[in-house]
Length: 444
Ligand code: FAD
Image (tube, rainbow, N blue to C red; front, side):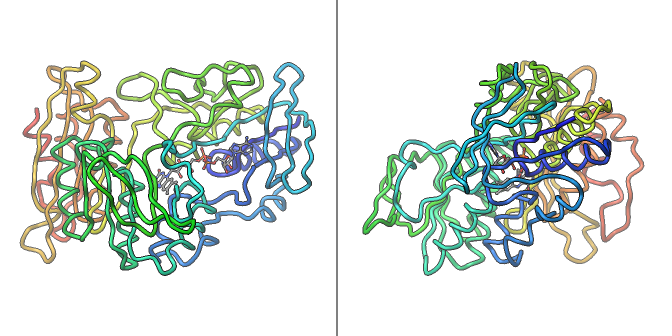
């Protein structure tokens, strides 16, 4: 049995490790077109800001460690074609400069996503970047040497994490966002405002409703960003305007691509082509609240999908439970979290939903350092079924609450169930009636 895995980061390496544990006999080979595998891309902004020492620290297991566990790892090795009938791959060895044909019995496509690069961002000018992987991080690091002004295009979570880390290095930062506000894909509009206030207080010049039209440069380096509202001077530009799933290989193999644009799989992570599996950021999943397909590329989802695929490819039987889109990010002193649906999501789906907003303190107001916490809880009218929450609070205080709601969503629980829950309490951690319980009380 020869198991071949294309892509060696979160989904691919989880699959390889799991398959290795499950089957002692299978040959397991990971092919990646890059130079780095098995690392946490989520830590990239913190290397740039200095909270994480270096890019090497992000590596979970080196290729040598993987090989010692009986997993073949080939870097600089790009899969350019799949013959599903013959069960072979066309593989280009970047170092040797030759193309070969590799057989497989089971194949996992774990090729992730690529950052969207608008036409104006396709350029030879130095200092213009995206942030997806370690080489991107290294290139930004090099551009930051001697830089004073950064321009971040896109106000999503990666752009916001970068804004904080660039400010930590003393750069002036302008954030350009085409939409009406930042964090638009994560939060409802009124909650976006709370994030923007803090980001602006920290010195980031946020310009929403601004469309980038081009770049300016001199001597091969970027000097600014041209917008429909004038020019922004910049020594470094990072384009963080979204991602698209890498589905070309799956498509070429004849696998179905879902309406979300990501690879369609069943609960065993099998594509529609026999012997071919898909997992991670390139793959869609069933949303546990809506029961519809969704594409929400996140780290735990990729790892979990990879695990499931690994077990099944090695002859076992595992199923992926679905997603809630639970996410959290840090921007300056804020932890911004959401799980399930926002009110806007529910409205777009035509669900009869209503929300309540509660602002309080993150722990007993008489105990030191109590800070504001804002919670929006959303439920279905009539049934009281919980649909989701959004939380903006000081640092980790949003983490506990979002995870509580995620656990309830998974059970398809009601607002009453949440209100009845026996949560922890002591003054340094929460109020006796935690903000979540207050929100549940007001909503049912
Ligand atoms: P990837 O990590 O994209 O790996 C795919 C691999 O496939 C790549 O190494 C690529 O080289 C290889 N590949 C692609 N095509 C081929 C081919 N044809 N042949 C050979 N190899 C190929 N998620 C969170 O949940 N929380 C966070 O805080 C968070 N922060 C993030 C911050 C940043 C800056 C970034 C970029 C991502 C962040 N994420 C976060 C997302 C998280 O990193 C991804 O969900 C996760 O890396 C997905 O793993 P994956 O294995 O599916 O894909």
